[in-house]
Image (cartoon, rainbow, N blue to C red):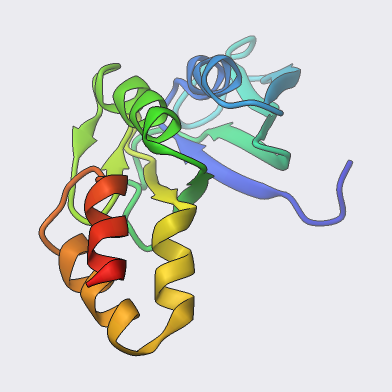
Length: 157
């Protein structure tokens, strides 16, 4: 087990979420699945309570803790993409599987977990600073899913 692991709280679908992530993102997998040894406030003995999984190389634990807590954009997974095709693939997988679009490359999966699907051309432009960063930032602010060609055009001015 990794020394530091992200724990993501789900109502009851941690296993389904982990399997979706494993099918969607490279270097992702579902590990061990643990069942509750007895009844607990939001479930029964034998229910899946913890799922160990990896998302894009990052170890995570999915905890089926019940409806007490909801996700917020204060926590998100950020997936760096190399081109529009990869951006579209991840965005469409999340949004097309019951998720929701948001702004500036953010979307939410059907379990309420927030994602940033971020083309490297955007992060490179912001890192460049100056007018190039300003133009790319202003272009991004008008988008839901990031349009790589529009960011490249903004970078050039």
